[in-house]
Image (cartoon, rainbow, N blue to C red; front, top):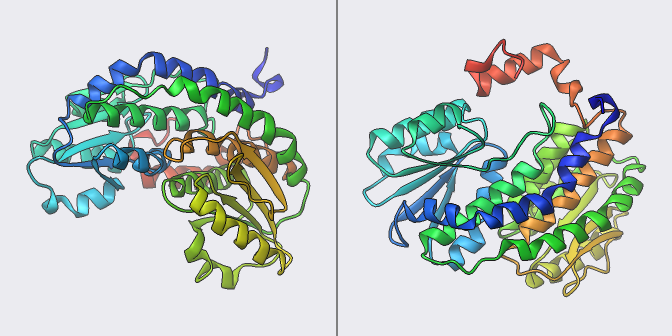
Length: 359
């Protein structure tokens, strides 16, 4: 079938339960990679840009539960804080291509300081894979070129959970048990996302707290990549003290609340925003519903530390449908590549070595 007749992004979104089962089957390899960095003692710095950084944040609650001193830092942050690194620190560096400039620079700095570094990549891992003495690949085949990250995001998150478990000396995590919850999320979100996308919103605010901060950061990034709709992410409580005051009532507010404490506050937030005429979409769970929201995608009850593996999927589908409603093609993202000046400048900012390659 010609790519013009396919919907590769939808294929990528839809294959996530199968990808999760495949990674679960390789669980011991990822645990062993984590164990190679040492045990619970010492700080763990997880560094990446974009989706990898969001996945590291989404993994933070699980890592903390295991007793790991888990720090999420962008590579530029890590470079600025180089003098703060000390013996006993470990670094996990994430890049699917392995060629993101700042991640490579941070890895070189860490290697020069003699600290253990694990590269989490897809394939050989480019420059990053060549720097790190320890490397593990997602081995996730591409469906089509230049796709928006969907399966690669949840696969990165799943890999980080297994790596963290390996550092802590555990082996009890069964990620395949979450595949049915992903399937349920996909089934619940498709038609609803298409209906929401028909509405004319001026922007979107994605809000949560805890590990789901990584999820809403990721969701906002997908909206930016796929649509021309202005999108922001933020902490749910802090939103009321900052973004709220400049937000038009025509924005869509998305509340990701998979923890019961967060759901209680999100329920009252949706009720309050309704008084302003603001439409809200809640991504909640069967055990902690947000009945006051305009729309709901209700996920099966899932342990909050693992819920980010499921809660990201409705945001992917929402971004896809909003792109279609805007007249854009989320399956090719040619609106990005065809803006040649902006695309070239993006490579100057992040992947200077790839300028002129079309990648």
